[in-house]
Length: 453
Ligand SMILES: NC(=O)C1=CN([C@@H]2O[C@H](COP(=O)(O)OP(=O)(O)OC[C@H]3O[C@@H](n4cnc5c(N)ncnc54)[C@H](O)[C@@H]3O)[C@@H](O)[C@H]2O)C=CC1
Ligand SMILES: O=C(O)[C@H]1O[C@H](OP(=O)(O)OP(=O)(O)OC[C@H]2O[C@@H](n3ccc(=O)[nH]c3=O)[C@H](O)[C@@H]2O)[C@H](O)[C@@H](O)[C@@H]1O
Image (cartoon, rainbow, N blue to C red):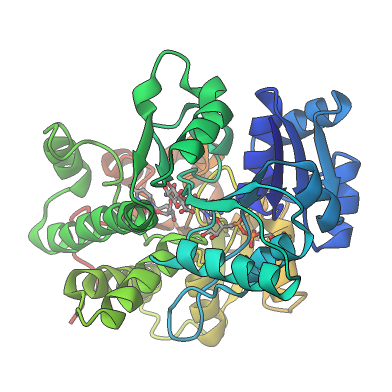
């Protein structure tokens, strides 16, 4: 099929590339000319395992095209995906300006029937807004054309985006039209193999809300386990044992109950807020969503609080001014260079505010850190984990990169003179750390530091 995808961010790029790889002819359109130029050369602007190879292979095969020429993108393809950003507005609601700008572009250039597929995460009722916007633009042109708008939310995770797109648990399509069902079945046929039940059709509004419900549910699981971790700390129980204990119940499951320094990324924080805002608009106070958000906000400050407490207890220091701290991990999770809403940012900013100097290392996000914070005297971007530890008063771990997991307690004890470790991702065995002479504070592991009032 001939498919156009508007937006070459994470979702647009993965969608376009995977659809091309499945044999479709795909045109990816973006308003960012520099990005398109780089993509035409096969350079991708994000770190996503496997994606660069896939882009290059499909560019070479002539099935994947990158352009700023929206008129070409609209006229050449039957299917038109919208995959542009929907950032949070100041009040937490989703900003639909980019989505509606694409709708206008579609209305301006359409010459025949098109199926418009909304892949961006958008509030319930957006498909109707897109429909109205295209209709209004067509009316201005005084043309009358048949078109459909459906909802097809995306569930990929950064770092595992290709597998999530091509082998995801389900593909949701919100539509009431038989023609749209047929076209979407053709579009996704290569990914269904012998599992046609993975393609789930439903009402447009149900599809739109499913996306927010899924992210809110996952965020709720994380805030829930973090709340239990905070209790476990005070009660002398180990959250890692509790996680195994509850995760083995199939009704609970082992996924997304890893306690840590809070969830980040471009989606959970934004989508939980947007859903709470939507609830407010229909006259409902979403107490649970508010609590999920609040627990996460608090959790992102735990590393700093633990550090303050540990330094006071172990070194008698009451101020962080003049301290040097090693920070491992900047990305909001491993296998990405994305630092949007990352717990590391809350930590870094608190450390700087307190007058500390930081020596950071991340396998992928160093450039992103430099882009966000620029050059500053209290930030050293180190080239190895070992370099961060030189003269450090403590080590703080924000992201669970494999490289950090592999470090042994004895290696750490040898290279970290201060022997103080605050682990926001529970990477190590506390007994092994203690046996190596380290003072090890993790999340929810009975260290009883810094009660939250
Ligand atoms: N990043 C992720 O992991 C996931 C994101 N989503 C949702 O997908 C949507 C897109 O997210 P990202 O790809 O992360 O966005 P992004 O913000 O990284 O990229 C959006 C792209 O759209 C382009 N754009 C803006 N206006 C345009 C226009 N009129 N025509 C063509 N291109 C235009 C921008 O230049 C940018 O390259 C959001 O609604 C997000 O919530 C859903 C699942 C996963
Ligand atoms: O809508 C979206 O954009 C996407 O949002 C998340 O994907 P992503 O943000 O890439 O990352 P996750 O792997 O879900 O992790 C999000 C955050 O939760 C944290 N997390 C995750 C799992 C866990 O058990 N504990 C935990 O603290 C991670 O460290 C990370 O900071 C969802 O997992 C995707 O299904 C969804 O499509």
